[in-house]
Image 1 (cartoon, rainbow, N blue to C red):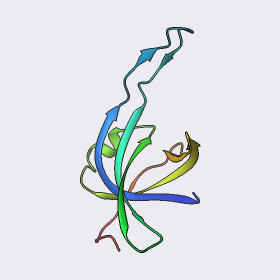
Image 2: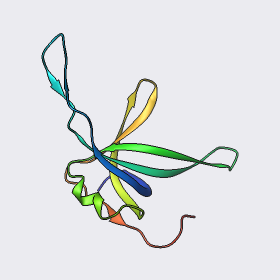
Image 3: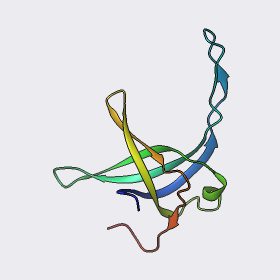
Image 4: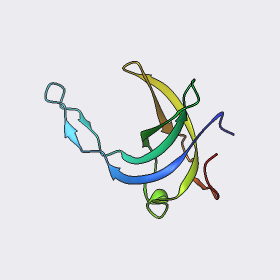
Length: 101
């Protein structure tokens, strides 16, 4: 079981552009991604919407969930001073019912 769940609305799915590093010749990109609109509650009680770009194993799991609220088991890491998320290997989204709290 995952310690972290990302909850939000599936907005978009896409594949990151592919490219080649000019110095090393190494290829990059082509990773499936999902954009999730997540609600972040601030210390003062206000709410901020954050668009989270989430790396996933299989974007087709999310294609039919566009517009739906989902919960996804995720891991987190720091990227350039900000927290970034990725879907855990083999993780599948759970469709949620009802309205956000």
